[in-house]
Length: 87
Image 1 (cartoon, rainbow, N blue to C red):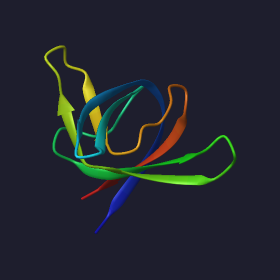
Image 2 (cartoon, rainbow, N blue to C red):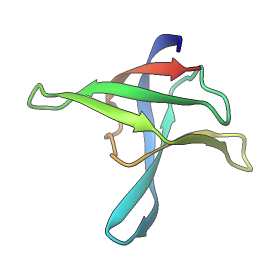
Image 3 (cartoon, rainbow, N blue to C red):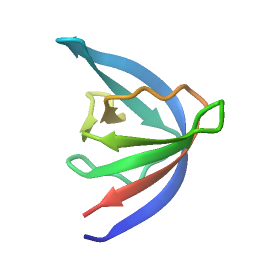
């Protein structure tokens, strides 16, 4: 399995759904190298300095052409992330 990395900043976060106590969020980045259907993960640092790994469940494109990165853990707007694409 190969991977490639890039850095980005979270610019929007929206709750997509909640079922059975499980929330799914969609995150927009200031730029991305992901395309629809790709998998990967985000790495970020919490305000307390803890390393966070957030698996990317899927990438969707809405009617306006915005690429949404679907995850189970929200990241706040302005969070700097390192994204890893998995192929």
